[in-house]
Length: 243
Image (cartoon, rainbow, N blue to C red):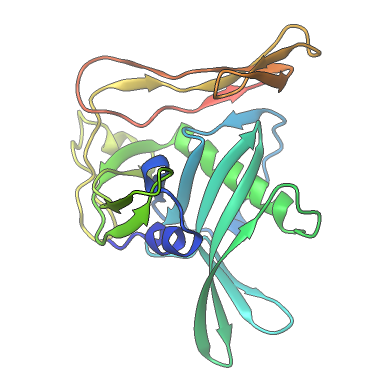
């Protein structure tokens, strides 16, 4: 399986040592067809930096602009505050029958980015899937040479990618130890559970809580670090719902 996040990371010059890719099994709907969430809770993502893509499909397909069709193949999400992100988008534009690929930034503080509220809604729906569905690990092909935050050259190989699929009885270890991806790869089960890092609501909404770095800068909420339970291989953190 080819990881779309590699092309996105290369074009946006991302430090992949800090980014956690997620691959979702296609569930018969593109992002623009997903039902809108009516919940007012804030979903805490598993990691502060992560990517989202759908196996074998675009996240959003065939959106028509004035000049061309636009499809989105991957999203990079960088958490700034509770439910506030900077996004990187991997786009495929079809112009006069030709496919042109481009990666762009959508920043939370750019008033010109009209697509930002839609991206927030889309990412929250995928985080809901992380919470409700089964998560295992797969390997993807390819590699990426990049520079980390210390400007040292590193090579990233996508060997333990988190794969999200339907949470049904047939995918439990007792019934079917190894579900498969669409291309026939076995999904590896995880042997330990992780309590997800989350944003806890403070009793006094005017109080300031801790951010991810431990600084008291977040009004009304505080960050609680994740921790693991059990023995075995590292598991992706579970999602916590913040009211």
